Image (tube, rainbow, N blue to C red; front, side, top):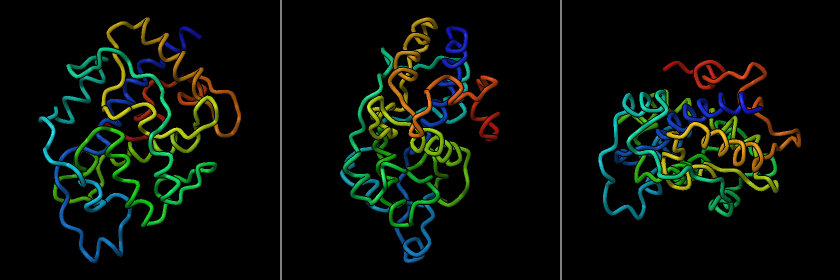
Length: 233
């Protein structure tokens, strides 16, 4: 198991580095009638996403810089301590949106109205003020790598996984309002952290055992995004 978890540590670095761009930082264009009629979950969520934001956050590294840091297992913005799993703060919001938390649908299967209300929650869960990072600046319907990664994160984590007690697992359960969640400087510490937090404190909605292969597959693939989800860099 120790060897498998060592591989898992590298893989989770890739997960978090990629999902960090789920909702980045630039002001979305004004909502139009066309947006209201044809919102696909990837266009601007409207004013809700930026409500309460008085100032932009400090300039963040470019996507290529963040990806490189994740690949190396390091980064200037790594937290002092890895962030433990916590109960989501958005369970009531998700219920209000009308999402069945016992059987959460895939992101693209949510209704237009639900998607529009979920986007600000994703943004808050990662600690961003606005939407760029997942979305291309000036074109919120343009397909980006980060949009694909966000969909797969939802599909593989939010949909099938739960807390140890069977509660809802949402983006903030791991991110807790920050894009960076792992301190990877001490490899042995990361291995122990992942085993304690991600294996023992998470459960599967289908009641099967939570183990390394749940996310990495039978072959223990470490490049989950590129190899299992088929999303090239």
